[in-house]
Length: 297
Image 1 (spheres, helix red, strand yellow):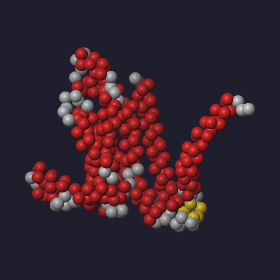
Image 2 (cartoon, rainbow, N blue to C red):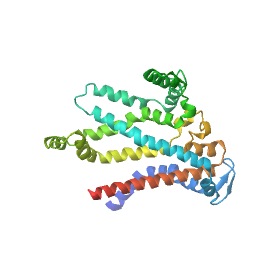
Image 3 (cartoon, helix red, strand yellow):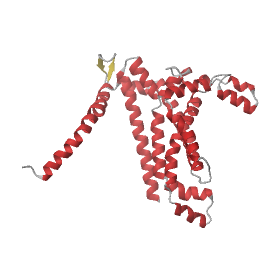
Image 4 (cartoon, rainbow, N blue to C red):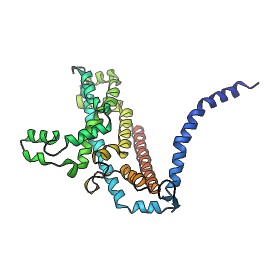
């Protein structure tokens, strides 16, 4: 007869086996294959030639890759510096017990998440259209300047258009995270700070922000990773191109163009690994900064 320890180990192995199998087939094997492909030049899915570090050298000297990386970083900064503060401000407003109809406002701000990216992109094309678009007509009506009707967002201000669309699409999504964190802040700490005479800014700085730091860190990391992987929105909005002078080309779009339009899966894999390394480095830097802040108090 087998011992209880052996039976327990066998039981755990049986439970873990499906996950290990699925993870190996759909994660480890594709990662290993992409690492192999990064050292090859491919001509479609069936023909490839070993080129060693040539793809890496090509990537470093590829001006189009650096253009795509620059666009992606601009979009990421827009998400972090514009979208997240607005999401946090919305969460603060909706967390106020004095605000009536908070549930309705939450639904209104979160509702863009319920729509697909294809639908959002189509709405974006219509909203940012010259002359008849909602954005230009609103700007012209508010300012009284009819020349704003001629703003060509999808030709001259591509990255600004993407940032504004993402703001509308994701601000409510990030607001939910911040709102959940704010509702878990210890009320006794806020009341104690009020008794001590702390104003709204002081309470925000010394009580609320330290209390929601773990959630805020998660939201920042999630937004950064999602922004660096931007693909669907510009791909549909710009009709599968990078826009005029590739002003809307992102790293993942460039990867797609090389891998699935040009058939060079090797160079596309090299681009993918460059992006993955970048994400890992940024995540490690952020985690190190958080640990340093925690040690300092």
